[in-house]
Length: 114
Image (cartoon, rainbow, N blue to C red):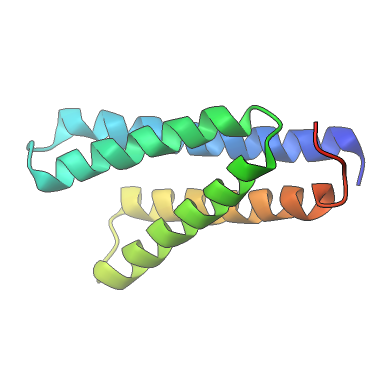
């Protein structure tokens, strides 16, 4: 796979995670401040940090993006019986991020570290 395509896929994953994190943080303005809101704020902060890392070249960030998005997706599917449209959008963004990060990681696995 060409380098520019790998960079484009990584950039797309970074944009998705960053927007998802910003959305989780911005959700504080539309809900009551309780334990779930604080958890959403912390998760949004983690997503923003992962998004910043994905804009770089680290393979570790790809592992973190795959694992965090997978855990959040599994928790969302397991704990919530009926997903609202915004929850569905977040789940789709997480699943797309998992696929993109896995694809990039698969293609850069044999390249030397920077």
